[in-house]
Length: 118
Image 1 (tube, one colour):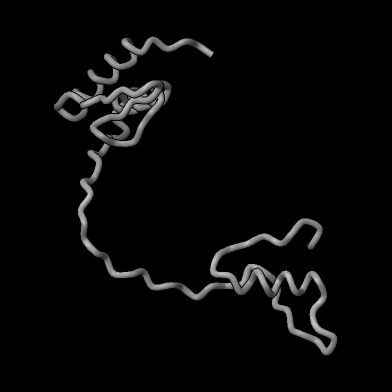
Image 2 (image 1 turned 180 degrees about the horizontal axis):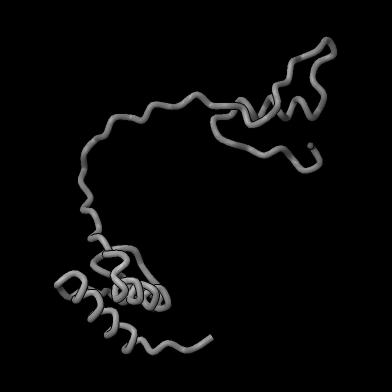
């Protein structure tokens, strides 16, 4: 793994960003992390990749969306499809495996069967 010089990487990124967007980026430095224009934190290696993308003209990074406090309508819950096989109760009740399938299928989130239960 090669060592990256942060001053070289940051200056190359600034020039590529300025060429692509017409303004200098606002870079916030934290130990080991760099935030560009208040966006997602990136490592130095990620900045190298982003510099290559900017200089090749593939993508233009978007400015982070400003957070607004608006209430959105609650999302409609879709019909949950059972991740397990359908089990019907017989005269003697459920087997241990079938009981786990029924219990976990009733929960509102996906669950795994315990180890050993196929």
